[in-house]
Length: 538
Image (cartoon, rainbow, N blue to C red; front, side, top):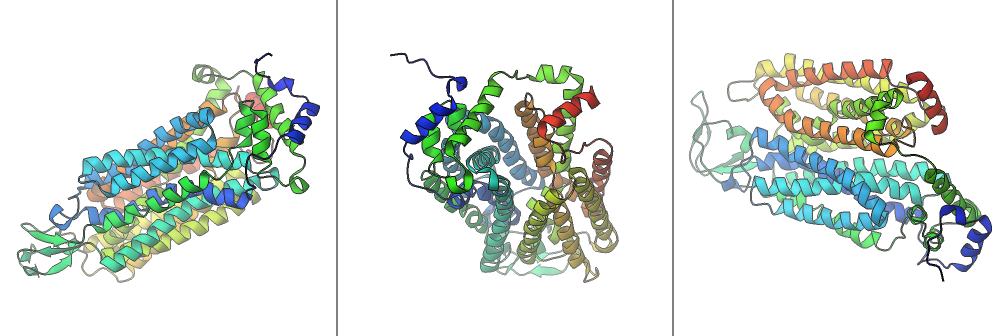
């Protein structure tokens, strides 16, 4: 008996129907809602692990005697930046592992890495161990960003595919909102970053800020010379980080109860297993015959088998594909150079710089997180209703205005009232509230106008899509890391006004890029776009 594996062309429609009739489901029926809920726990972890650091960082600044990490400004940036670098690796390698071993298998592995990363960060004795586990956690974040949308897209029927994949993006933002909420609760329970001083703390004017044995906010004494700290509430950051282990365990348990992607099985020509998996998630009355769907999947395999895949050298040496690759990479860079992650990772820092007490700054981050979630929901409607370019132009215009206003408020209403110790004295009472309002407008504009992921998924022809997408997403994560690393340093050196003016100017160029160079993709099929771009850019 021959053991030669069958090719896609060997499966006729009748043969497929015969297999459908004789192959039982591979397990219990699973609803699409349950699959989406479980799989997007990976996206929730993505959001939680990127957002939780916003509330944890202020406690990490506390001295070691107060159970902090004695964090410095330059070290702060690397905590976010190394996660992004790990995410770039995870997105690249995770995608390959997903193709080789399966989507469900990959998500199971990522759940374990999420758990190891969360616990490793929680119990890190020093900044260097924390850096290591932030890279590990970043690998899981990047792997989830590359695997979960694919798993959902391949598992969902046509009628709700777009909705399920959109839920994935919403869960990322909801994860960030959940992180901000947990941070706020813990900050209210434990108080903002506080220390007990062992000696009298005196400011530059010779005034006593705190008596020996008194517990005060860290921000009131951190810039004073010769302050000796005996204890504090620095362990709060560990409670914030360890909460990520709960959804990681839930993901590991839940994903093991779900079927593998039927399309992954078909891509590996494991047709009976594909049928068994599909029978667990399909309602043929609503979704049509399973045999038709398997045949459609195989037709994709038949076409791809005859289609040449291009390497990077061929993409770059061909004028029109090089043009598209450059557009995709700039879109990825521009998405992060909006400065959105200065809000996602550092909002408490920004609000504290505006004059809010740190406890309030951590709690108020919930408001910006909620506005971000609302913006994502509005963004789903905008992308379906309007042209891609127009949504991008709306986003960039709104961001330029928001960041310009933010720079102006810091320049005119906050920085003139800062003394030598960094305290804000006599500034208008409405100034910090105005900063919060503008930050909320900024995150709403960004989240409601995000079309980067849609555009990079549509502009590349199929023969270069995998390689080109990888480069564009890699550029996005590198820009994310860069912003994470330099923002605390910029705030320390340039202040809020200078920092946000720089980001405002960058976004002026991004706006011009959308107006001049970004093509519209909404109104054509992917095949029509490929033909059009080859004519226009050759």
